[in-house]
Image 1 (cartoon, rainbow, N blue to C red):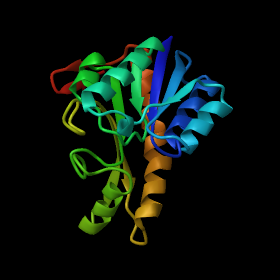
Image 2 (image 1 turned 90 degrees about the vertical axis):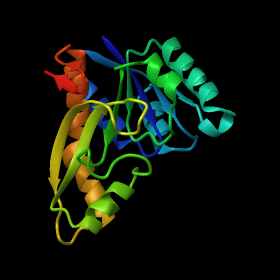
Image 3 (image 1 turned 180 degrees about the horizontal axis):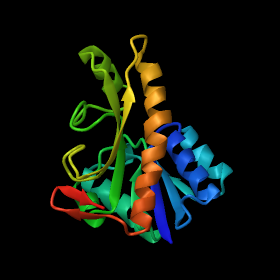
Image 4 (image 1 turned 90 degrees about the horizontal axis):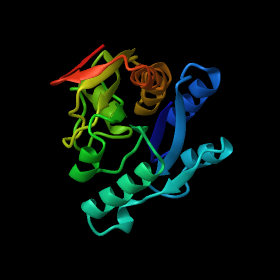
Length: 206
């Protein structure tokens, strides 16, 4: 059984998709060991409570250094016997110690087709705003392994989503979540849980 540690910062729609896919049997080799919120009061933590999943708030602002934050976050996830860390709309920055502690065992969902609209400062609604500003006809989402440089790790899966002429950043964000993020994040977790992929250099091999 692959034990997941889900890191969240907002509403938790990607978390809910994972919960639903575990309940349906699609992610039959997975269990959510814990949910970690970057701040209190977010709805993602309420989703965890509603589904009897242990949760904890570990906020970067409570620690004087990134190293201390990394250590506390790592120790909590290890104490929960987490096998795979899933950043599901997690907006806090982690440091070298955390990435090293879970090397090739941290994945992230990003709301664009990397390498477009990614990197430092590209989070939340911003990739969708930039996609519309640039006038691209297609955007989407990417699941990738996490490395120290933002959005730089080996790509596991991508899915394209049409950009419509009438789109606003909000409508585009919603469609990317519904048509891409909710699907490829769980698909990627399933591949990992079934040992059907490996990292070779910069590439993910199925």
